[in-house]
Every structure is written in C-alpha cells, then in structure tokens.
Length: 374
Image (cartoon, rainbow, N blue to C red; front, top):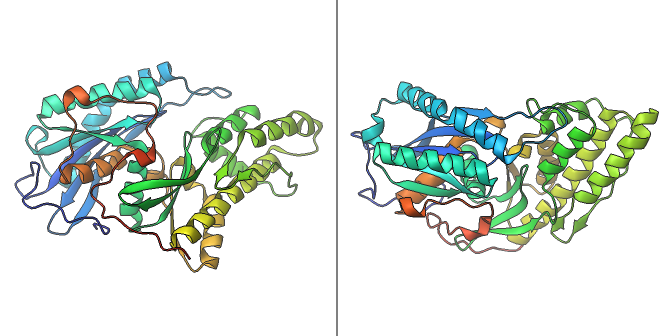
C-alpha cells in the first residue's frame, strides 16, 4: 500500500496498460550483483506488486574480491538474458506488451562501482529506446529504503542501511532521507568481506553469509575487539586490523577457532550499529526500525536489533535475502514513485556516478514530516 505518500496524480502523468496498471522495469548493477525487476502498480487496490525479480551474482575466487572490470564483463554477459527472463516471468502473472505497456525503464545512477554502473546504464538506455518509454535514474540507497517501506509496511521508520559499500543510520525529514550517522572509513560489508578473505572463507554464496553460519558454531571464546563509536558515527578499519592480528597469531597457535573469531566480530560490529540506531530513534521519536542492505538479512543482527527495539516498545521491520540484497525490483520501486510524480530522466542526462549521497535526493512523493524528540 502507499505508505503516507502524496496521492498519485490523476489522470496519470505516464502511460498505463488497458487495465490502468503502471508497469516499469528496474535494472540494478552497482556492485557484484545484476538484477532486473518488473513492478506493477494497481490503482484500484493502491498496491505495488513485484512480478519478477531475477538476478545473477559475480562470485570471485576464494581470497579475492571483485574488480570493476571483471564485474562489468559479468553484467554485460548476463543482462540480456535477465531482461528476457524478467519480462517472461512477469507476463505469466500479468500479460502485457513490452513495447506498448512498459511505462519506464529505471536504472541505478549511483552510488556504486563505475564500470558495472555504466554497463547497466547502457542497457537501460537501449531498452528505453527499444520500448519507446522514458528513463528514470534512481539513487541506490533510496531504492533500498523504498523497497523496505513497501515490503514491510513501515510508513516512517528509522533506517539502518548496511551493505558492502554503505553503513548509514537514516531518518526522514522535509523530503530528504537524512543521514544521522555513518561509517567514517569502510562499510560493514566491506569489513566482513575482507575478514572472510583473511581466514580463507569462500565467496559463494557470499562472504558475509559464510561468516554468519560459522559464527553460529562459535561463542565458546569471546575475543575483545575495539569498540569504535564516535558520536553517531562508527569506524570499522581498526577492528579489522585488530582481528587480522588475532587470526595471524592465536588462530595459528590453536588458541581460538575461526568460529570464535566470526562470533566475536559479529557481536562487536552489530552492537555498535544497535547503539547508534537507538540514539536515532530517541532523537526522532520513532518506534520503528527498518534494516536494509545486504548485511541486513543477517539473522544475528536482526535478533540484536529486535532485543533493543522491544525494550523500547517498538517494532523491527526486517526482510530476507530477496529484497535486502541488491535487486532490480527495488530500483523499479523507487523509480515508479518518481515516475508517478512526474520525474523522468532525459537520455542525454542518463549518466551514472560512483558518489551519490542518500540525502541528495528530494523525495517529492513523500510529504514533509517534523521530528518529535522523545
């Protein structure tokens, strides 16, 4: 359902199907995952429905990260097949003609890795010309938030955005998603990925998931690590350096296990995130927390956040890997909201950028809200 957004203009500012539906395609490829999603808006029910959401992941060899050039090659090799699959799956739920009924092609403008972003932007421009429909450039971070709001029915939560490239605590005010706190060095997902490489964990299906599973076997030895919270900001690079030294010394001597290291790292990092999220809740007078981003599907993080939120009489809004991890449907969701309120992107302006702050986007589909301190 529309969650406190402005009413959608009537008649629509864009083309619709014969039934009055709005159908858009979203293309996401800011990091090592490329996804294509097809989203439908039904004005009679006032609902958004994900018709299809396939994706592919570039998995690098154990001990290595993913490089921009190799990742962009992966995206270029898979984007055509994904578009075909997404449209075919969507048509099974709601028959439509792509060159007639698709209202817009939405794509990730940034932030992200330059070469993968460019590869997906080229694909989006091509589809826009092929289907004769406008483009909508989308901020990756805002897409995570809007997908989370719709999927969990959370109208105005405090948002914890945790992924491989971003770590932010966000609250909405005056048509902007304001960043209350963030990492001052590396993102939490990057910290986890690099630690997985240090102890030789596989990148399949993802380093963070493998750390989470290994941490379930630990807990017998808790290794004290630096706890670095600076006001509303956090720092992870020193923790990574410290646990790397622990791995090189005590792990090799047999004093600790890989499971103990994974358990200790998770507990420390997640406790820091819970602390700054609680302060944002108090400042804004909110009782809902929404966790988005790839790290957000970690069950231990959700458990720790649930404990804090419950003590405050609030509600945790969390998702699984289908919508936490980068996907095309989230780009379509943010794009359709912009499209419905008259925002499109000219072909000559359909650029992409590696740096695109969450609070740079004016969310014209949401009314201004004033914080009430608690």
